[in-house]
Picture 1 (cartoon, rainbow, N blue to C red):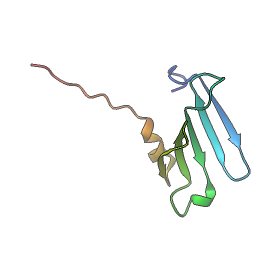
Picture 2: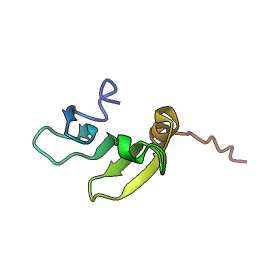
Picture 3: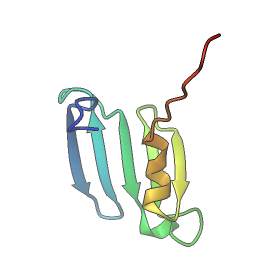
Length: 81
């Protein structure tokens, strides 16, 4: 999505207890989304989570590919008569 121009910038942080990939609309803003890996939650809710700018968890799971499907856009074609 960065290459497509929808997101303008990203950042990677390695904290003491988790790894965070943050995406930004502009460099000077708060991140639109944070994709976090928290190994402490691996056996419970899943290590991966997508969190929006307000801090709400949008999707959580054990598989990163499944969690990132949140960003897949599905286009529905409607035929008019």
